[in-house]
Image (tube, rainbow, N blue to C red; front, side, top):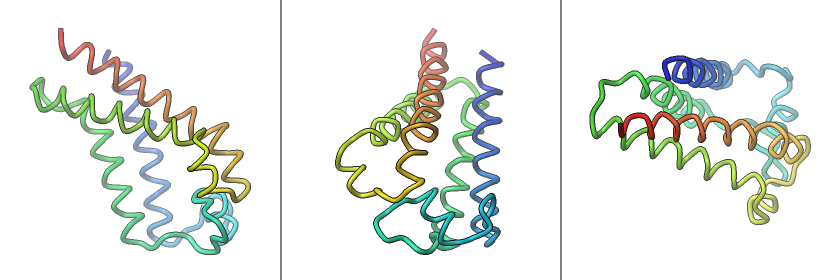
Length: 137
């Protein structure tokens, strides 16, 4: 399970690093704020990326998620693993839910959400669920 925890943590640290770049105003990989916003936020008519504060909060949350598998065995660790699994699975389901699709219709977000973001959240959720299951034994 150490390999699984390491893999999950690596993925989340990379995603957190990208969010940190955005919080600092570096629009990677598209280098255009409006195009990037349509690719990663996707809400109707979006023309600008979210501000530094909300993007930084996402960065911190992702780093906590990346660190969580490495906390000492405890009930709190197990509860956190289950919560992370549920959060990622809920985000994965949202990618395919009609209300979410209506809220975030911009392209290329809509396509990326169904082909990349949603499936990635499924993988992360399943990974945390496996770690939770092992933490119970």
